[in-house]
Amino acid sequence: MTAPGLQFAAEDPGSPEALALLERHLTFARQTTPPDHVHALDLVGLRQAAVTFCGAREQGRLLAVGALKQLDATHAEIKSMHTAAEARGRGVGAAMVAHLLELARQRGYRRVSLETGTAPAFAAARRLYERAGFVPCEPFAAYTRNPFSVCMTREVGG
Image (tube, rainbow, N blue to C red):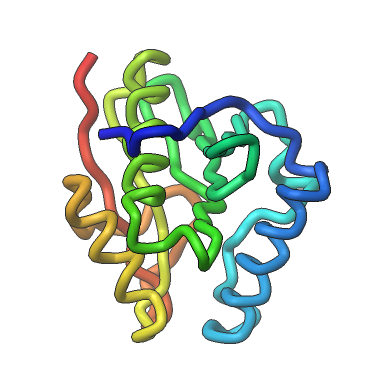
């Protein structure tokens, strides 16, 4: 599923446009989640070799960002998903998830997982991931079972 007019490409997370979206993402996470449970990647984390940072643009304007982090040869994680407020409700976030899932499929991953918040402010994100086929799962990687996080996963075709 791609929203018409969107172009997807690898982005520099340090570009001014990307930094603005990432700062909104981090601010939201920090306002709604206790500090020890904010798992959003910062700029250093997004520049790790295991992370591919992507952007969705429309007419040159960055509307959404998301990253795919390799956990192992068959498992990747979606990180740093954020859609600009003015682009919400138009399918941009869903298109970014679809793009990241296709990237995972092309890279031969069999599973893609993610962690998101349990607070009411994260309800739209949880619905987005559920519509994309993600289901709740046990904590993976360094995540723990706690009242502030929900882990989700889905298989991807090869």
